[in-house]
Amino acid sequence: MKRCKFQLNLLLTLSLVMTVMPEAMAQQDRPNVLFIVVDDLNDWIGALNGHPQAKTPNLDRLAKKGVLFANAHAQAPLCNPSRISVLTGLRPSSTGIYGLAPRIRQVEKTRELTTLSQYFAKQGYYTMSAGKVLHGAVSRKERETEYMEWGPEGTRKGGAEGKIMRKRLDMVDNPLIDWGVLPHGNDTLLEDFQVATWAATRIRELEKEAGDRPFFMALGFRRPHVPLLATEKWFDPFPEEELILPPVPPHDRDDVPDFAWNLHWKLPEPRLSWLIREDEWKPMVRAYLACIHFVDAQIGRVLETLDNSRFNENTIVILWSDHGYHLGEKGISGKNSLWERSTRVPLIIAGPGIEGNRKCHEAVELLDIYPTLVELAGIGKKAGLEGQSLVPLLNDVNQDRMRPAITVHNPGNFAVRTERWRYILYADGSEELYDHARDPHEWINLAGLKQFGRIKKELAKWIPTQIEPLAPGSKNRILEERDGEWYWEGERIDRKNLVQ
Image: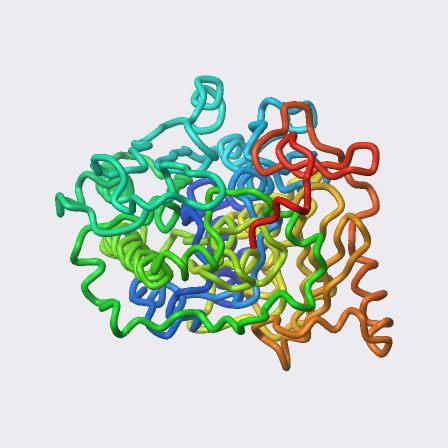
């Protein structure tokens, strides 16, 4: 018996060295999971070259330790549906959750689903959460069911008294749309600092605890979500006079269907025209970069604690963002679009058996996170998931992936992204097509050219045919059709009121 046990352990050890862990394993041999989500972070990190002045040394270091998926995309360009998709393993078009409401347990299709954290708990993991992992304030029911332990949620404002940027916005004058230097200079007041402190403390405490029960720690960092506020030291590396703005041609939307405006019809996030008119484009870009720099440092505090712990060699680290963010591209700021700037996100996976310093350019989806972590942890397969495990790509980043990434924003509006192409189909039938090999900024819409008809047809085949309507209770960022008219958040869209 002892000889058999020794041979089993030897085979397991060899499998970890040769490849990523594909099979179920004993609880004491299972890896821990550090699950990190960053809010509203686009590709402005050093490892993705999204902005030449971005300062993200800790995210870049993590990318070198594992695999960076350089062409990863969210299932929705909005917090709530994106996060629910990751945690349930289902597309928004399968659940009917497209807006900032309803919540995961308020919809019949998702009410009884086993979420990612719950599945790990069923397999013997101790689950913890801090910060913004679920969307918005955590309900009492969610506290009872989603995780075993809860850390701080914190606040969005971080100690600011009133707004720093006091100019009136052009569409919805929301108090969260704010940017600038926090006057108090105290990082400890900020939620992300508190989340990092809690996580580092818990890792050190877990080290001292007896037993080998694996843990699943989910951390949600809020910045660079609005308000774009940080203390002065995070702004200092980005002098406004030296700031590089995103490249935006003056007629960026000339070949874009008018229907695209419906997806971000009336929002708190200002248009580029307002940012230019009010001389706020550079301040907003600077604040976004500062907030990224700040949150990178907080994530670095957690990673450093992990690196110096006994869990270092047996912890899977996965980092992702719920969606991207516009900083003037296509004439808008914020998200709520089906273009690259809204859908592309950082996705990094590092851990035992994963060879580091590699980059994968295949189009992948955040939907793939659930099946990937289940396979990496060796806890068997979870039925009913719509994503595909990324383990084959972790083993060979050059392996071909046979399906694209798909993003949806309200029923009937889809983007299909392959390694080369982005195809957008709107609910009224209008289209966009971009060739990323020649047009990485998506400035030239090829959809109207006959020679690209076959490519559009092939990409359109991937759009789901079964599309759930808006779930009961849907609101906030909701677009719907009623009797041939389009309504944004319950009000009929009138083109005469379009803000460009």
